[in-house]
Image (tube, rainbow, N blue to C red; front, side):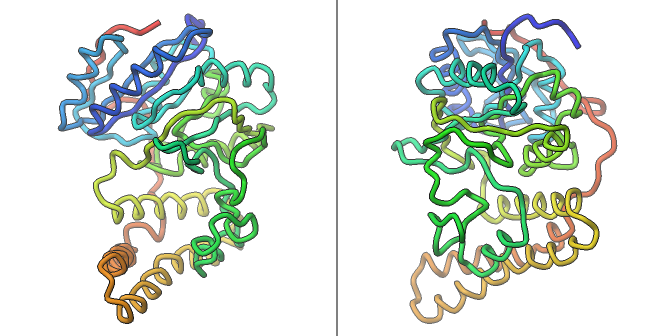
Amino acid sequence: MPPHSVDVSILIVSFNTRDMTCEAIASVVRETREVSCEIIAVDNASTDGSADAIATHPDRPKLIRLAENIGFARGNNLAAQNATGEFLLLLNPDTVVKDCAIDRLVAFARANSEAMIWGGRTMFADGRLNPSSCWQRITFWNLITKATGLAAIFPNSAVFNPEAYGGWQRDSVRYVDIVSGCFFLVRRSDWEKLGGFDAAYFMYGEEADLCLRARRMGARPMITPDAAIVHYGGASERTRTGKMVRLLAAKATLINRHWPRSAKGLGLLLLSMWPLTRWMAFAAMERVSGDPATQEAAATWRAIWRARSEWRHGYAAQIGESSGGHEATICGRVAA
C-alpha cells in the first residue's frame, strides 16, 4: 500500500450529475479545514458534460474519465486504487458537505477506531432528516414488514420499519449494521484487507455487503450526528422503476451471499412479495379513487413486478476487478 500523503482521500463517482458534482467538490474544499485531503472523481461516461466540468473545476480534483459506465462499486474501487490517504471517504455526487463534516467524521473515527466504518447524519436540502445514512441488515422480519406494507404505513416505528431504524432521528451516536455509501468512511488499509467493494453489485447493496464482511472481521460500524451533509438522493436515476429493479437485485444478492442456505429460498420469496403486494394494493386503490398519483404508482409497481426476471435471483457473480478492460483517462491534480 502506498504511504499516506494526506489524511483522507475523498472518492466521488458521478454519472450525469454535472452541477451537483461540482457543488459537492466545492463544498468539500470549503468545509474541510482540519484534515488534509485529496479529491478523486470518477466519471462513468456521463453525457451531460460532467467530465469536462470536473476537469476544469477551480478546485482541481483528480479526474478519472471512463468510456463506459462501470457502476458505483467498480467506480469506487478504481478511485481507491489511485488514493493515497490514510482514510477513504466515499461521498455521493448529489451531496453538500456542511459545518466541517469531514473534519468531524475523521476526528470521530480516530476516537472510535474499533468501529472500522463510520458515517454521519444525512439531511434533505430543507433541513429535514434523510434517513438513508444507515440501514439494518436484511432479516425475515423486515422483509415481512415490506411485503405487508407495515413499513410504509408506520415509517417512524422501530418495530414496523426496522430496516430504516424507524423513529431514530440520527441524533445520537449509535452502532449500526450498515453505513450508507453516500457518506462512508473507512481506513484504506481495512478497505484493502476487505478487497474493496464486490464488483457483482452494479449499484446499491455494495456498502451493505462490505459492512457485513467487515463485521465478520470484528467491525462495529458507527454513526455520529455531529458530521452532517445534505444528500438529495437518486440524482443519477432516470426512473423509479430502474432504481427499484437495481435495489431489488442488490437485496437478492445480499440474501444469496449472506444468508444460510436453508433460509435463502424463503428470504427470496418474501423479497418477491414486496413489489407484488405493492402493485396489488395500488391497483385496488386506483379502481376506487382514480387518483392520477395512485395510477402512476400502480403502473410503476406493475412494471417492477413484470421485470422480476432482472432482479429476483440477484446479480450474477463477477470475476475480476480493477480498470482492466475499461478505457480510462486519468488527469488533473489533487486538491489539498
